[in-house]
Length: 132
Image (cartoon, rainbow, N blue to C red; front, top):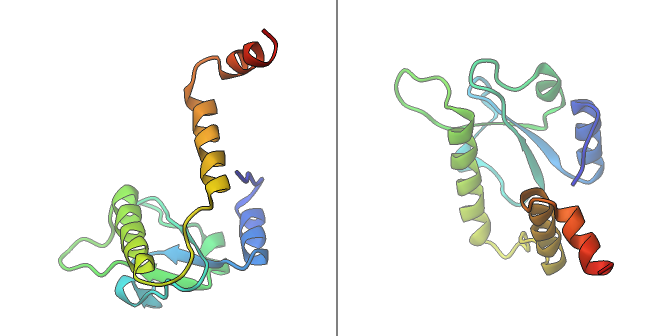
């Protein structure tokens, strides 16, 4: 889990780690979803329906991604946009030989983090286990 004090700190760290910054926006004509290159390490930034992604993200973006749409609607709800994009990228990744899955250790860390956040009195339970 990484926490940052600002969007800029987050973006700088991700770029240092080799990620391209992908701003999802219906207003840029860089790349449509069906043309997106899933072989590059990517971090997707989604904005709210009314405001979109921040100017800071737009300025730092390596790529602008949009979902092709027909009709009068210009944008989708953030949860719908994220679901469509992540489903597409996951499906495309499964068709490659790229090792994109979490390692067993990473999966266990995520499970433990989930347990810590969902089990009431987690710390007290762990304390009783180690110090009966």
